[in-house]
Length: 170
Image (cartoon, rainbow, N blue to C red; front, side, top):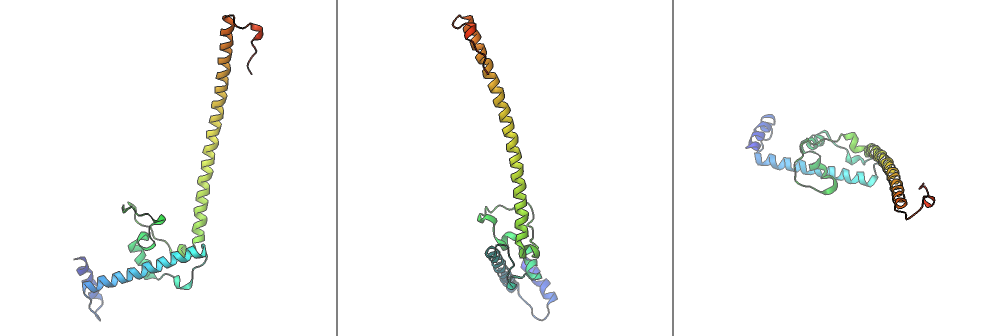
């Protein structure tokens, strides 16, 4: 049904050649397939160059950008990390700009800055945790000193040790 509607729209604009819904479906499939191949090649090239410039045959046409925006990044670039849970994301797929595809080193710098900021925050939390732990240990040491003194007093009261033998615990 949808393809019939699309077919009538396309044929109303293009009068030189009338296509069937099945032909349009095949044409769309071929266009998408070629686009996916090109985006896969771009991704391979980006990995090869380590973020350098892409070859000239990896430039993206406006039509390919439009196809990517329709299909979404997962369809054209694949699932990040290689695991697909088949769960639909609630947010709309974002589209990479042409500039981002040709300059992944800028994206890597941005990601590295974010990672370093997260690491800095983690280190601050760890420093706070260590300060709390140090205070806890000081309190525990004071508690043990008091316990030792109580024990010595009890021993003095029982006559087991004399006041002279009780030494203050440091």
